[in-house]
Image (cartoon, rainbow over all chains, first blue to last red; front, side, top):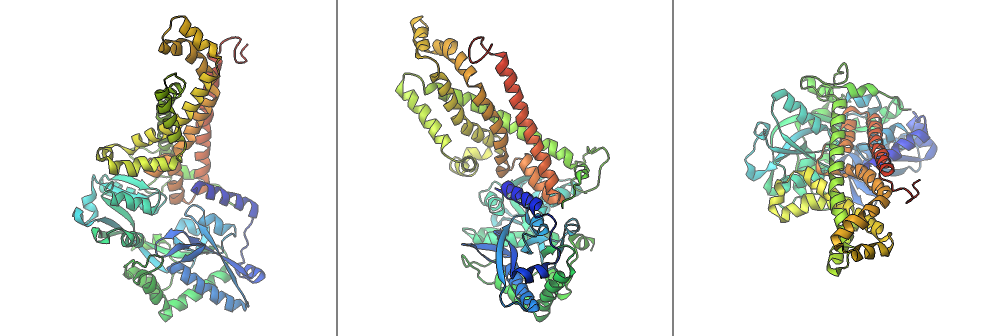
Length: 298
Length: 246
């Protein structure tokens, strides 16, 4: 499936040719905008089924686009949703299929060569989820254990780096998606699941018995997650950044965070239960679009 | 438009530094090293599964042509069971469902589970081809063999199967090529094969196009090599005057 979508993206890239760099003009001209969304990226961006999408980033984008509509004085703005995957999101933004990607994309230096990011709206912390009964409290206890993570995520590389730096050895098992990785932990094939904190919290919240699982140990990495837009389009970037910065200043973003991460959310009305981290609050206090590399330096 | 960066294969997988010569030394692993090891896993899964599929598929195909109705039934049930369930679903049944029902299966490495799953899936298709091969022979050959005083197994061994297998080499070649491509589902159960490599390395390097193109080329080379090998085999075992041979 993923290969197919990727191929489709590659073909679209060939057909579309040079991408339009002036998104505001494109939106004004067509009266429509395409929002890239994820099927299942925790509370950040997910589907409710039936072509509907929701989540923290989807709500932020909806408000940003409302501001853009005001700025362009458009009577009507048609917002289309385009589900994307981690394999095709960058090509789709580059070729103009998607105008603004509201998923869970890490802002890093390599990607900044291809696309631009709005100011960071969420800082992800990579954590370890274990079964509460296992007694594991940190990464040091995972040596020789089965550690699950999801194919196609930065966590895989993170584990490898950790093994290399400390000369330890995990038995890594790769789930094909987050639900699959969590199943590995639940069924006992894996002793731990290393992944972004909000994904762990979300999966635990949806588990048959959430009390059986616990997020433990140190923060393994921090990654700024941001809304992605086309590169070299300063007017659109400014419009998006201004809109988001205003939400940060007014405290609206904190309210939205509370709504998606601490209150029960559809479709199953469960709580993710993950309070905003200090790093996330810091990003709201001083809006910036620094890549992950700048976080690592600290 | 996309610009190419093939040097990405020379990068070390943990530090991201370029390695001269592209092959890592002393514990360093480049993306090229990783891809070749992934190719090994792909071929390993494919070849072992093909072995399983040939053995089981031939057996089931033969059972479906014998006079004993009970044996025919076993062969039919086997074939229909494994032919009518999607491959990915079968892989998940082997990996998640069966081990939760039969505890000892939990200790079995996922590599073996995938080989068995892929092998059994393909065995259903091979069984169909072997059956067709046997049935394509004139009925008189079977009776001639039995009339000569050969037992039923001997008739199969010396009269029917030598010709039937020659007949089905072309469709078997297709199966062997398919199994290389189907082995890509193994990524779903944590086998570090080519498709998983493409997804993971593409994510890490942001050079998804290069990764997928390289992996595509390796799949093509593997399947095409099997195709050539089978063609060679087909020419070598040809019986003069039969099946278009000169």
